Length: 392
Ligand code: LMR
Image 1 (cartoon, helix red, strand yellow):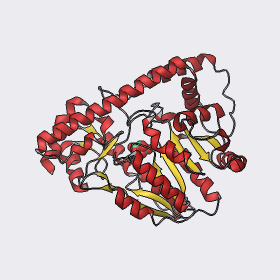
Image 2 (cartoon, protein in one colour):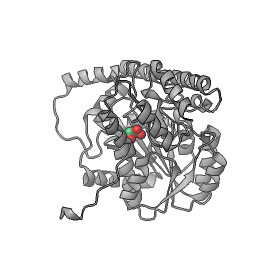
Image 3 (cartoon, protein in one colour):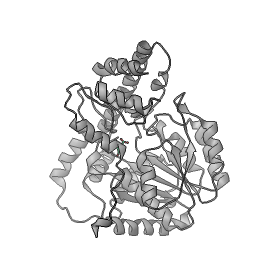
């Protein structure tokens, strides 16, 4: 039977991780997968997470099943963080899911089950797994212009023009903040315009939120999303806790649906059934850890402080990298690095240039020239900048 299987295209981010692991050079630099690293290049467990785990270790007395949609309390706490009361509880349905990817997947299954769904509009470029999952689920896709490769900023006019072609019952996939892979983001004014377009075209907004707190702060990062949610009748949000709680391997995510109150019951029922059909019960441990942090004021303050420290570190690295690149290239070409937000910046290099950086300098970035800013350390910024200056 298995002779009929075809080999699958590999995910370029995962492929890069494997290549990096095999490289024996001691000065190699990993700017690939989106994982936060501290000044020593390590990804330690966040203090609040460690403390929460210790408390759970002492207090948890069973590993029996949780409900099919996981912990409602956890989902509601995450909902509070993401939505900031922008929508009435009667319009919300939740399902815990294995990470942001799990939430994306479950929400697309829900949309597909609704039958009427048209095209799913994906930014060009986007996180490669967006397109891969849509293809896997057999859903129709369209792409919309997003990033200008020359200025390395959002070209909103072109984006808006493309989105004008959306039709009723299409889905518009947006990045909540800290766009992956580009690092270039919509302003609040642009979110307002997109919201109007969503209303006019009667499409379903679907927001992937994986980096809340990594851009301009926990509340500011969701201002656009909150405005949109307040002004539409239906929406879906896939939330990941991987990055902002640093619980990558524990797979902690939430699928959130905003609907008319009359539809809440059926939406909730479908989310539950889709979980049962896909994996039965979502993994509990990471969600229990996060939930405890969000419920305990002391742990919450500890978590927020550390998250803020991480955010400020990333901004500092951006500032240093932009100024070093300016010095090395004697130009303003890379000044956008300091305007981008989140973990990533797409540098606007060709895939050949990226390849030279890898081969000749041991610098690993995704072939579309996305770097993980959080993978940098102050002591290697000069090395990276001079290598980039030497290949452009
Ligand atoms: C990334 O984009 O590097 C992360 O979101 C990790 C992943 O799963 O691709």
